[in-house]
Length: 447
Image (cartoon, rainbow, N blue to C red; front, side):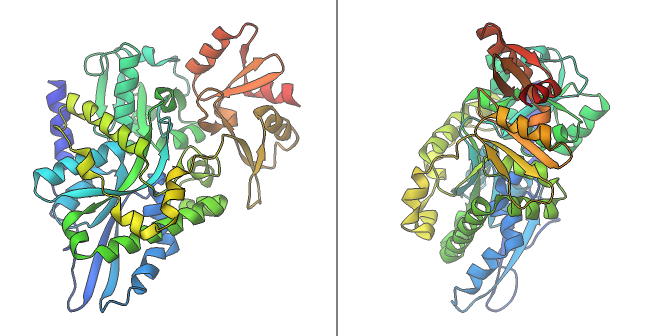
């Protein structure tokens, strides 16, 4: 029954919304309206949404086409990928961005309704899966994923965060269908449920875990990077639209690449822009989108991401959310290759920035990096009232986290941060003499 309910709930999200949008080519004469669906607060998609819109790069690219058309861009903001898919299959959105699991549902729904879509580029990714996190209330006694057995957990069924939850529970020996009580909720609803005590944990995607932790409304229970499976967000486009307007899609992808370069060259300024548009704290945006953030931004469709997408199909099938999906047919990188030209091969081969500790000082337009967390803590000790945020990478997974929210371990002269208590305990168990300490103790020891 739970599986049937989950499937029906997810399917409901995909029903076309007749009250929204217009035709993909609304307007008269030579005016073409390009409708772009995006998720402003899902900040792993900003190079195809929030940041791209604020920079105006897409409109500039369209104006440079000089093909006899006048172009207008209709930006439509959604909380998740499901309604974007609904609008795409209704012919009302031309280009959209969403996470890996919603992308697969996008592919399945497009095929089912005879309106095929294609994955045409990537926005942000994490090769270990660190974009999704399970959090619990600050005062919760839960300390490991196995503690969720028999508990109420909020997630968005069919999302990447739900996929992380399912896989993590399976590895912990818990049946994801029968071992917990899963509530299918929008991220904001789940956050409220966690704060109100009606659920025991929340599994969500960027930027909700970091936001709630930063606000002191949650603490990490499970770092998605422990799965060591890539997760990403990408851009999908309707086949019928791109067949009619290939130059428009190429213009979008060129603009996306420009927004990506802007983010990578000006990470603090980009975080401030996204924060202004979304009303998210810039410190939270930087956690994910910064120079050494959890997400790496690159439009190239990397083979390891496609491989991960194929592995995701089995999770959706087990949840009865979809049948078989031809991922190879869904992926179409011809447009991004053409848009980026000779730089595509270089982008395809590029690796994420190495993990590093960073401090963002008040009034500064750049961050300061440190070789190790202990050096960062020493700096914090001397500048307690002058910091906006301090970030450290998990000693095991490399996932960046707020220094004052991390679980700290002292191992001789070393000070090691961890996102979740379970990974810290695992390290302590494997290293004689290591012990868990508080953040204040870590700062004092480093000073």
